[in-house]
Image (cartoon, rainbow, N blue to C red):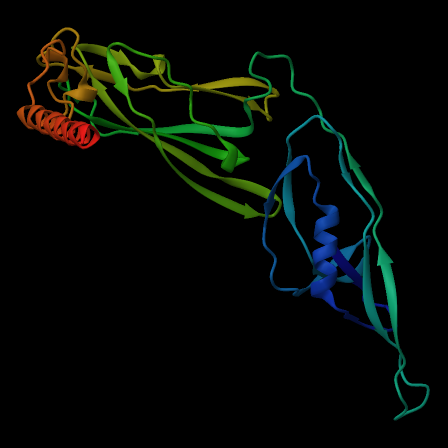
Length: 298
């Protein structure tokens, strides 16, 4: 949203109570059915541009990228901006005339195209993305933690990118990831990356293709079709396997659950202190009842 002043405009214009007007303007133009990535314009600097051979001064007021969240059209209503117009004096040294003039935009309606049929149509991201992955080590021993980074980079709604859905596995423990994102907003394009960092702990020897665990589906705008990014890394595990029924989650050094699978829950320890407290309480209650009985007999 910009205000344009033709170079040939005969009067001087200045902004009038812009802060108060902007609050209402932005409240009006922001559609409720969209995710907004605001470029955060803070300086109303003057830019000289040419449109159809005519020179203008552009004052950019607001710039953002909208990502539709529903199939409803994006409706941006007409908004008004009041400016102070100063006319030249009728005679040299005379008083210059000032008046408030109002400029209005035309309403906009943006059609939102539905995505092609797909089981995950309402869940996938839309844009242009690629996968960059790194792993701490490709060769590990059973029970050894491996750091794996799954980074999605490209153009789209970076902030809303969801982590890949990881299936359950009996051979590999995969802990919930930590997330880190960097978003760039420039020239109407939102780009950047989002990284999901996982801790992987193998439970047995073997060769594990991480593509079996890490896949990410999105709609590719350039190719206009669904696409899948999947890992190209293979993890080689060698070493002593864990005992049957054991889990790395509870066998990590220092864990309060270490060895819990070997404890017989049917054998409860005897608490002598609790037993002594119970006996004392019973004796005290008996003494009180006895005193009450003697008092009643008298």
